[in-house]
Image (cartoon, rainbow over all chains, first blue to last red; front, top):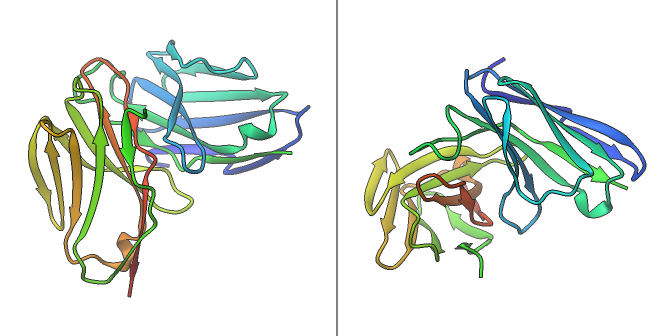
Length: 116
Length: 110
C-alpha cells in the first residue's frame, strides 16, 4: 500500500448507528487531517493532528469524534449523525502541520457517507 | 464572502484547446497557492504549487498568481480527455490552514 488509504470507501448508516472511518498513511508524515467535502462547497477542514496531538477542531459537532493512536493512523468515529452529514470524508497527511511553511497535503480517496 | 471564490462550471472544451481556470481570493495574507486535481471517486492530488506572485510551468500546466489583483490561474495547453476532472484552487498564509475554492469541473471532449 502506498500513499494515503481510507476504509470503507462507501458507507450507508442510519441516524442511530455508530460507525468508524479509518485512514492510514504510508508516507512517514507527522500530521493528519479530516476534511468534509459536500457538493458545491469548499473542502471543510474538520480536525488536524500533529504528532498525534489534536491541534485543530474546526467547530465540529460532537457527533464526530476523531482518534489518532499514532502518526500513521487516524479514525473518525460517527454516532447519531444527521442526513446533512452525508458527504465525502477525506483524510490527508503532510510532513509537518499547517503552520509549516510550504506544507503540502496528500489526500486519500475518501469515504462516501450516506446517512438515512 | 468566501475567502477563495471559484466558478464551479462545468467547463466543456474540445480536445487540444487551451483551458483557463481561475480563482479570486480576499485574504491579502495568502502567500502559498496550490492547484489540486480531483478525478471522480478519488481524492484531490496536488498539481501545482506556487509561492507569492509569478508563473510556474510544469509540462502542459502553467500556474499564475497575481497578488495585486488577488487572482490565481491555471492554464492547461493541448488539453486531453484525461484532463477531465474537478480542479480545486487553494491558498494559505504562513502558519495557517489551507483554504479551498469550491472546485471547477472540467470536461475535455474527444
